[in-house]
Structures are given as structure tokens and as C-alpha cells.
Image (cartoon, rainbow, N blue to C red; front, side, top):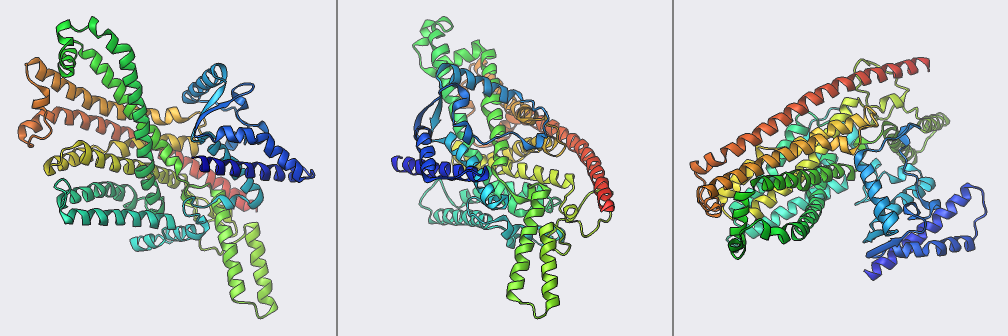
Length: 591
């Protein structure tokens, strides 16, 4: 930790000095080594405090003095165009808590592993690289550092040529996607070999087949959601990355936050509930074991248990999981969902490099060829490249033909196509999350019994709540990003999915509780009668049938909500496409 902290401080000092040097050059001021070292020395204390493994970052004048104002990157949304920004309820709550706790009471930011400093450095590095090398330098995969320009033209060529060959899409994957798929294949091979050894009775070849079936269930949904009809709205490369993000990152985030909620709930029980148990439980029961006390409280105060399940379902489960899935979508940056202007610039840059490479490998033999090459380079620089095979075709309804010398028109996709891409991306994240969660439920929470594991997989497969909630979230994201409804923020985006997810979990919890309550009321033992290790039978199926029907009803209601909302949104996006297409034709005719 000490070595890592020292390296981070050195990197921070390097950024501070380089950024100060660039800003002075832009203002036309003379830059001296002494001035740079003075600025580094001035901010060294901030760097040390910010990069502590765990500690506090003291504020001088309040909550806004966390970092020197000269080096705070403006995070205002450039898309607002001067419009007043209305913060949603989540932002207002966070702002109030930060000003109360960090600003008024403790006068410091709580630091853990330098996470705030890393976020600030990311913004400063982006600012520095953009000034020195242009925005194109940031268009890379941050794991393999492969530029978008190396693989996105291939993806675009598949889209424009309507290539439906799966092998062609596989060959066009980026280095990162190849590595992710190879890692998955390697892990499956290792586990399969371990299962063949037959050294562990709990992990046999049949267990391995259940594991493969769990992945196949997620891939089957992806086939219908993406490959069957939306393969050109979002590339296979993007789907691989979004699925991996959901499987690896969002699951870990959910585990951490749900663990924190559990710890907070246990502390609350220790401080508020347990000290007052003698007032609600007879004395002779207090001296018995915890199971007897729990059963007594369940029979005597069922409303309290239902209220607890409500909080657990909507807050600890639904809210946390929907938030991490939302941010899991934002963790992945893919050129498929970049702005049209950025895509045009990216493809123009690729075309320019391709032209330069062709000119270098095949030198001109006469003056006319050289003149033609120079003319092409000028057209590329000004955006007039009508021969680029990677240009994006306009898919706007009502626009049949466009002048070929207008690349900015060819760099557009219909809003519905982009909206479909957003939906597929968010569903892919949710499926990755659900796949990892299913593995946990099947191999951790379920006893090592093949029938029970298959039953768990089947019951979780017929209720695809996670992808459905993600699809509902995508409607709000499209309203904000495509329809430009700036009042749609995080709260309004995740609220419908939280209600659906929370209702689904709450209904299952309540049905299970009512079953336990009924057994206790009849003098039975819930632990014995609801034993998971008992063999699956028709009686057991009839017992859980009400829970399955309620869950199915919730899923059907959610599906209807999504279908109606998506169709209404499609009509709105079609209207915007036609309006934008007419404006582009008008501009082209003027030119």
C-alpha cells in the first residue's frame, strides 16, 4: 500500500505540473521550471491526503474546497446549451448529506483507497490529453488500449453491408472481446477437466452441465433480444463487453452494497430491537434458543415481519441491483453508441490513415495521380469523403436519397436504431448480472442435488426480471439522451424498474412468509416441512404454485408496461427522425 500510494502521488504531481504548463501556454504566459515546481509543492499536501488508503481529506472553507479550484474540471453538461439544470431527488439528497456531514460537521471528505482522487485525475487526464492530442486519443478500449479506429470500421462495414454471417461478426471483434471470450472458454475447460477427474462428489460432470446450461439460458435470451432482429443496432463486440461488465463488475458492486445494507440492518437490530425484546416477549421464552424466539415473534407480530420484508425487497434488493445495473451500462464506452459527430470524425480519421498508407505503399507515377491524391486528402480533412466504405448510412424514415458529398448526413443513424442499441446494451448488462446471480443461487444456496439445481435454474429462467427491468430502464435513458428530456434523471429512470423488481421480490417473500406462518399456526415446524433437500414432488409443487402465479403476474404486468412504453417511444422517435431528416435534406439542397 505504501509503494502504491507513493506511485499515485508521483503520478498526481506529474499531472498537476503538465496541466499547469499547458494552461500557461494557452494563456500565452511564460512557463518556468520554478513555477511548475512551486505549483506541485503547493498541491503536494492535497495529493498525500487524497491518496491515503483510508482517512479524511480536510476542507478549509467548506465542502467546495476539496480540490484547488484552478484544477477542478467543469462537470457541467455541455448538452444543456445554457438551459437551467434541474437536479433530481437523488442528487438533492446527496448534496444535502454532503453539505451537512462533510461540510458542517466534520469539515472533511472521508477517503477510501483514494477513490475521489482517482475520479478527479481521470477528468484531468482527459482534459490534458484532449488539449494535447485531440479527442480521438481518448477513443480507445481502456483495458487493451486498442483504438476504436482499428476495429470499428469493420463493425460499421458489417452494418452497412447487412452481413448476417456469425463468423464474420466474430472475426470483427476487438482485442478485448476476444480476450473475454477466450477467458470464458478457458475457465469452462478447466472446470470441465476438474469435473472429469471425479475427485469432488459435489462437482461432477452433471454439475458441469448445469453450469453450462446456466450460461446457455442467458445466451438464448441474448439471441432473441439481439441477434434475431437487432444485430445491426448494436454489434456483437458491444454485446460481449456489456455482458462481461454485468457478469464481473455489477455483481461485485451489488454484493458490496447489499453487504453494507445487511451490516446496517444488523446494527439497527442490535441498537433498537434487541434491547426492547423483554417488553414484547414473555420471560420464559427469552431463555430459550433463538429459533423459538423467532417463531414466537412471527406468530405474534406478523405485520412487523411483512414490513421488514418490504424494506428488504425494495431497498436492499431492488434499489441496489437496479442502480448497479444502470451504472454497469455506463461503465462501458463503445463506439456503437457514440455521438454521430464523433463517429464521423472517427471514420474520417480511419479513412485518412488508410489513404496515407495507400499513398505510401503505391507512390504516384505521374502528376495527375499526385494531384488526385492531394485532392482526396483535402476532402477528408474537410469531411468531404464520399468514397469511404465505413460511412454510416442514414436510416431515417422519409429520407430516400441524400447527396453523396455530405458525410455528416451519412454519419447518422436513426434514433430508433440507437434506441434499440441502448436497450440491447442494458439488457446485456442485466443478463450478465443475472447469469452470475443464478450461478450463486444454484451452486451456493441450493444443496448439491441435481434435481434441485435444475429446478432452481428453471424457476429463475421463466421469470427474467433482471433483463425486463433493464429494458424498462432503457425507455427512460432514451427519453433523456435521444428525446432530450433533461428533467428525466436517475430517479425517474430507475423508479419503474425498482417498483417492478421490488414487487416481484416482495411477493415471493410474503408468500414464503405466509406459508411459514400457516405451518406455525398449525403447530408444525417450518424448518422441517420446508426442507430444501427433500425430493421434488407434486405436493411441493402445489405448495409453491401460488408464489409462482403471483410472480408470473408481476412479470406479465412489467412486460405489458415495457411493450406499451416502447411502442409509444418508437412513434416519438420516428417523428423526430422524420423531422431531422427533413431538416438535413433542406440543408443539403441549400448547399
